[in-house]
Length: 84
Image 1 (cartoon, helix red, strand yellow):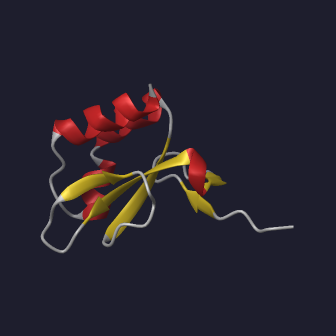
Image 2: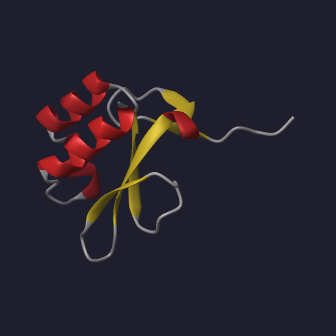
């Protein structure tokens, strides 16, 4: 049986299969993107694919602390669009 890679959501601290999470990446230049492939270079953070979790991340600025960069609202909006 093949092992399923698991990652922790930075908001809920629960472990999920990597495919069930969204990855947000900060590259060396400080650009933040939503990584749908899960393979982009840079520092990454995982969020559960849930509207409430993304809104909580926006409100508490947890992603900004983890990635050490200001995250524009367009990134949160993009994540919400991917979920829907």
